[in-house]
Length: 459
Image 1 (cartoon, one colour):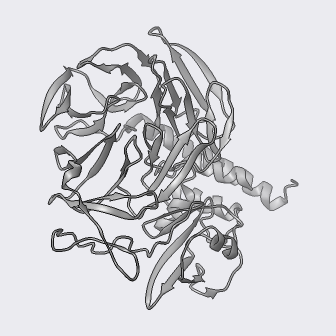
Image 2 (cartoon, one colour):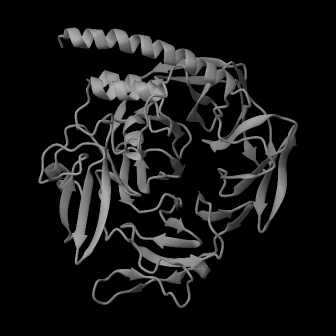
Image 3 (tube, helix red, strand yellow):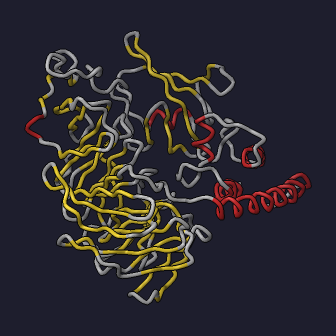
């Protein structure tokens, strides 16, 4: 495409800005820890690969790992190690130090943990670390997010796999012998390099057997031929699914069991505000504060059906939940877009209002649009921050559109978008939550130089 004089000038100015930002980012990397788990006595809970749950407690100079057994714990690991990253990935427990420059992959089997691999001088990209059943390690260095490195054996021999897209996350399949990279377009089989185009999960990726959830309420089924197939999207961010396909969601103190359409089957009020749901094989557990409990399905109370609307209703005489009717979004759902909180995400630039309507199941609701200038519109191309109003019998719910890369709200991706992102990175602009989602191209929850590059490549 031919570049105009203004475009060339923009490239020059943007190049200077990007170089300045890179210096700031490199300085920040040297001073800041990329891992979310800080050194404290507060435990972190994760599921292991054998159907159980682990508690990780870190002190000032030590880390301990305990396995939940009934309502108590048994110690499986404890030594002086400054480990900031601890998560079951593939078939082993992954550890990383506070400088994000050393990794250990350890098997968790029969109550014992043994170090088998140490890797130095790696700047690990968040959510991009996994191990297969042979404990070969696959990771993405944050300095090269288009490359997956496979470490073989205990002597850190490695092989690189270059991809054409930015890697969002890595995972290992249920057999433990195939590793995949999640990108915007779908997933890559690392060994073959084959791209499977599919509706890939977004942030908060959590795989259990062949089922997967993300923090946007998406529930997926995975197979090696078709990649991910969306089962449903539920209006919760705290969701898990067992290896048998049983879907659970939590809101406040209540755990809901859902069917494959995301409708409530039964529920249980724990009496505690639930911070996290975990699934390990066919087992489910819930975390509140520093405590974890396995879910006893016998405590779930079946949901009643409203005779007229066939809407699942929780028995408020037996449940103290403030949610008396499930799905306050009136069954608005989509297999094409991600619908969660007050956003409709996963919309590509150039999508029109008519096209969006075709991709959403909104029942008998009427639908209308308000653009980013607060003007009612009947159609045309959508932009980030537009309101989508669903109305039914006097009730109304409003969602806001998120178009990847479009932070101006115009619907197009151009130099104005990169100008605004550059200004944000330099501290000279502020974004609302919809612009932040649109600018976060890799879905890692952080707007950085890589997101700016990704938007720049589009136009």
